[in-house]
Image 1 (tube, rainbow, N blue to C red):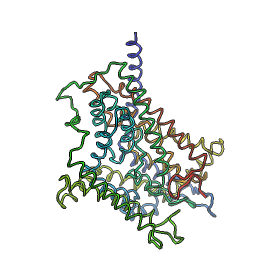
Image 2: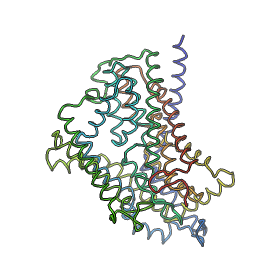
Image 3: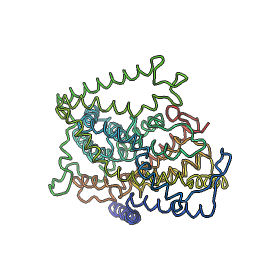
Image 4: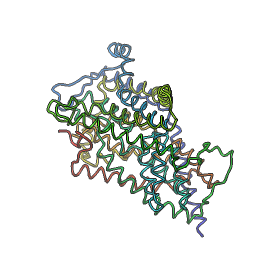
Length: 524
C-alpha cells in the first residue's frame, strides 16, 4: 500500500531535480561567468559615462560621475593596474596563509584524528549529536569534510548497532547545510571577510572593519543551534525513516562501483601513537594560545590600540590571520613529528605546496574576481546600483528586516546554481553590501545573513559535485538509490537548518547583539 505513493513522490522529486539540473547546466563556469559580468559592467559603465550619469552617495557632498572602461581613461586604468587588481584582491592576503597552515594540520593527520576522537568518545545515544558537532565544525577541513566525515560516521553508527546510512547521510547533511559556520575560525571566514572588505572601500561610511572574526559570536550561536538540530533530525527523523523503508544495514560489496578507495577503511579508534600525538599537539596548542593571550593582555601590549583596548580596531584584530596560522601549524607539526606523518623539516614545504596546488582553481578564479571587483569599484557603477536599489527598497517600504529576509531567500535560490560560495558572495557583495550600508546595516551583518543562504540549500542541488560522491557511498548499501533518494532525505535538514539559522539571526537583530568583536548590526 505504501509502495505506489513512495514511488510517486520519488518520481516528482526526480522531475524537479532534472529541471534544476538542466537550468544549472546552462550557467557557465564561474571563471567564464565573471568574465561575462566584467564585460557587462564594462559596456554599461561606458554607456553611462557617455551619458554623463552621476551618483550622489548619502553622506558625500558632491555627485560622483560614472567612469567607463572603454574610454581613454578606462583603458589606461586597466592596462596599468591589471596586476594590482589581481594581487590586491583582499582574499588572497588572508586565505593563502590560512590555507598553508590548515594544510599542515590536515596532511599531518591532526584534523582527522580530532574528528575520529570525537566520534570514538561518544556514547551510543549521543552519536547523532556527535555527528552534528563534527559535521558542522567540519568546514575547518574545507571540502575534505564531505569525503572524510560521512563514511566515518557510517562506520561508527554500525559499530554502535545503529543504522550506518543514518550516519552517512547525517554526516553529509551536517557538513553541507552548516558549511558556512563553525565554532572555529576557518579559511572561509577569511575569504568572506576579504571579499566584504574589497567592496566597502568606496563607501563614504563603510562601517566597522570586517575581519575573519567579525561573525564569530554569530557563528558560535548558529553552530550550537545547528548541531542540536542535526542530532535531533538524525535521531528522530532520518534513522526511523530508514528503518521503516527497510534500507539495508550492510554494504553490497562491488569493487567496480566507483566508490572512493578506502572510504570505509577509516577507523574511528585511534592507535596508541595517534592518541599520544593528539595529546601532545593539543597540549602544545593550549600553551601557544596561552602565550598569545598573555602577550595581548599585558599592559602596554603592542597589540592594543591607542586607547589601550582592542575594539573596534586594534593590531590584535589585524593579527587574526597570524594567530590562526600559528594555531594550526604548530600543533600540526607536533602531531606529524610524533606520529611520523611529517618526520622531516622538508615535509613542511611539501604539504604546504600540496595545499596551494589543491586551491589552484581558486587562484585562477581570483584573477577574474579581482578584475571584476576593481572595475565595479573604480567605475562607480556599484555605488549607482546601491543608491538605486536602496531607493527602490524604500519606495516599496522594504527597508527593514524584511529586506534582509528577501536577501537570504535570494542567496538560498542562487546557491542551487552557484555552488562556489566565494563566487556567489563576490557577486552579491558587490551589490548588496553597499546597498544595505546605505540603509544603515553593517557589512558584517550582511555577510552573516549571506551565510544562511549560502549553506542551507547546498545539500539539495545536484550541481554539488560531492552529491555524486555521497550517492556512490549510499549505493553500497542501497544499489537502487538515485539523486532523488538523496534529495528527499536531505530536505528535512535544509528546511530545519534554514528556519533555525534565520531564527538565530533574528535574535541578534532584535536584541542588537554584537556579531563578533567590534561588529554589530547597525552602522553607528
